[in-house]
Image (cartoon, rainbow, N blue to C red; front, top):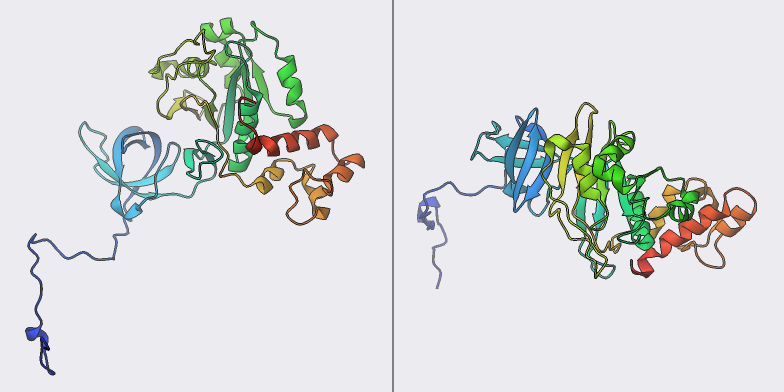
Length: 336
């Protein structure tokens, strides 16, 4: 049975009433041309603290962004109440393109990628030389993540009074990574901060490291006026530290124009998201030698052209060894 006749007009069409009395939804979104620029400082249960001009503003993500999430370091555009007054809330309506991204997965079998920090220039990998023992495989993984995400690495070795730094530095010597070595006394007294600070001025630096290495102690010394994180001791039984930082936080370096981003301590650093072919870009002395590699070369097989490239003196063989060690990190666990 036909509901309407052959010749219906608009008056004959039945319209479902809008019981809520609001306007019908539309796909046309506002342009937000008056949006203010800001930087995400920290994220806590869906609320993002952002720096807008010289004040902090609490905001939430606008619905039109969908599943796109903002992380610490993101440059965003906000609308709404930008006064920063108590109990006010703004909206993040745009997330700008990222210059760099530090990412990790829970493990190498986990396809879910977690963005830790955006737009950092440098990754400071903090490692204790003892108590807890250094984990070179974790350092390797952090280096791969830094090279893959467009960050420059910096090695910060702590507790040099408990063990010498020479063996660990020799392991990474061919990579020519900037490094700082500090003792436990220097760390506790805050003297280590002045040495590390020389590498931080004018840059955005994310600090990463497993628990108990002195990462948060160092961050507190670098930004004493913003000290808000507790520090923990290493467990005498397990040899591991206790997590004291629960979320990433960006802190300004006074008078230096730089930023320090403290991140939670990590016990694993999955690299499921990393395309090994991108790691070679961090080795400009080796990259030209890949032109004669077989298609889809892993750079660790008999026909790899990099062996001949290094043999002819175009690159240090130690550099090739370091590259292959880093490329193999996805096939090894951090504790191996």
